[in-house]
Length: 344
Image (cartoon, rainbow, N blue to C red; front, side):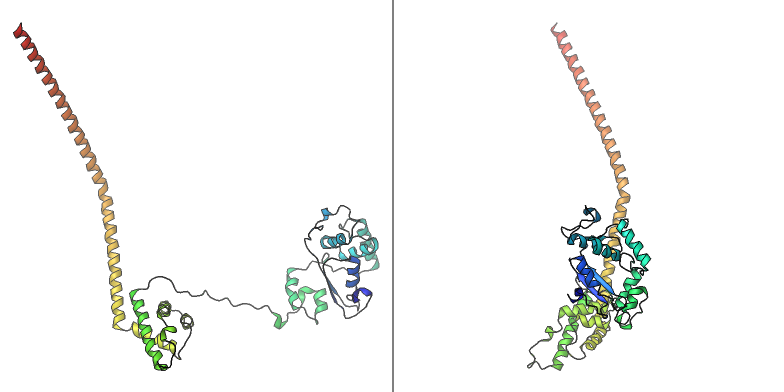
């Protein structure tokens, strides 16, 4: 309120207004900005689309007959210089919405004749993307320069945007059954950790069992990640961190010990034989399918020949049957004729 009562404070260089109001009152407030001869910054926050408001020029049926809300809506959408808009509003009571308005042309000519400096409002000077990106370096010491030449504000060393380091994809253990050698390795680690745990804690004094900290599920995740050559940080995260001092080093040593043992080599040999058996079985199935595909045309040819032969046999049998029937009929006629002659 003090800014609207004619107070001239040279220290005021920034004024911010939010919401609807009387443009004349708002002009009185922002007019207090920069009274000491220094550049000032006035910011007006308005709704880009106000409910039940006039949000485009075509919504104004009479540009020169405006109430307070119409004038505020006009300030939000007008393309005319805001300094000219406030001057016309103070004298004529409306916000111009077109640069071709005669009152706008007269006011612009008057300001030029009076030697006004070039206006730097948002309608006259649009900030470039470079200037907008430099506004984060604005402070009390370079405030005047940020208004006059915002694109060349010197960067502040402690005000550089933090660049987040791109982290790699999180490692997740693949789901599914383990191979026999990995399953045996996981069981081996669980057993060895049980012994290692009781070497550091008294069984009668400990209220937790080793399975509380390293069970078979964690062991499976550990051996899978170790098989994938994951770093120690990933391995330690998968088991939930070290519970006993030196636990991670102990488990890694026993993974290496297990892989150098005879049992591990036997498991690898067994898996290799099983894989070879599967490959051989697939090869046999493929060979059988190829042979079957080659023999199928020959079998079809033989079947066709057999059908033709059977057809010929059937036709020949039918012909012989007809001839036999005709011969039987002829013999019967001859017998009947002979009997007839004997009676005569």
